[in-house]
Length: 462
Image (tube, rainbow, N blue to C red; front, side):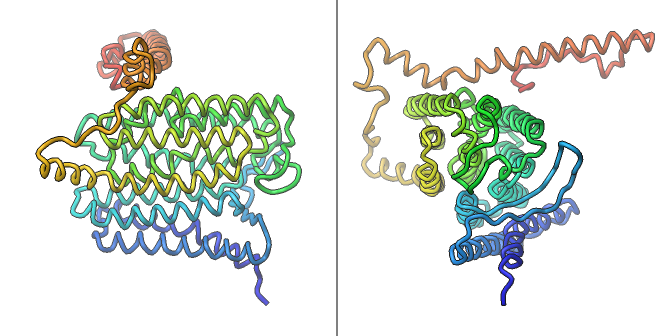
């Protein structure tokens, strides 16, 4: 007689342990200064992805055969005090299992593609270290049963994303864009962390199963009141907006194209860009309890879809076009979630992620094919569609074109009304600290501390 619970637990730990072991092997070998050769790295990646994929498919088969819809795997109470419980828990259900299988499939595809695309690249080992960190973060986020577990994976995904945007660090532009992506992610992370604190204050713990009265995803009703759901939901929505580049945080998405094409495909075309929608799906009972929150999500999705459609039509590079095309679909998915179409949104995520991965990976060779065709016919290929041609009144066409070309001026607005006030506040705090230090020390500050932050370009601070 088989112990089904034990088998499910072993398979579940294998799903998480395979990418964790991959990151450990690649990371430790790099820290020792003896990175593995390309063949060994590829073998480790293939083994980890294959093991995790097989384990996740086996769990799906067992859940279908046993008729169970929810398999929790708790890892113990790390902190347990009155009115506060810190628990790491993974759970397999109708939302997490498809997302985990999708993650392994697409990351395995990207890994196989990188075997040749990154061959003899100077940063081959570094790329796969960041890649393994991303896979681990995606799996942890997808399987998170508590908001603490989700926050852990959320952070790993954000860190690996920013590092890969700045992958070509010998150039100034990738580093600046990586910092921009990281700064927006920091705002998103702060909102998620604040939502975690609020949930612990209201319920004493962040277990998603304890937020609903009965039933598994997507069923169940939230145990919080409508006002509490609105407060928590708005914080989670802000976290989703930053992670998925929703308006007004859309400016970082085309900047993220500075990274290698494989990372752009798996991050901003397939997986990472959908994490905001995944978060909203995970907390769907909270959304159902607040009609105001649902309306806000629908409006945000429609506004972002309209903006991304306009901005994507005026981009001059293929990766920029694809990034805004991805944002358009993510915005539509968000609107579907706000309308309560949970399964439709999940199917939309799965299909869109696969399609966009293929398009991103095909983009470099597509440009080469276009150049070959142009050389063959001796002229440029005809433009099949022109932005805003016969689609808007003449007096609005130029204005819409400029607005789209400048990506809604969101970067400038965030710099002027968010970054600059924070920099001014920090300069004021630094001035107070400096004067207090000079008063206590009875002399001027050290020369190394006398750098005037106002002389630093704002772009560098961002």
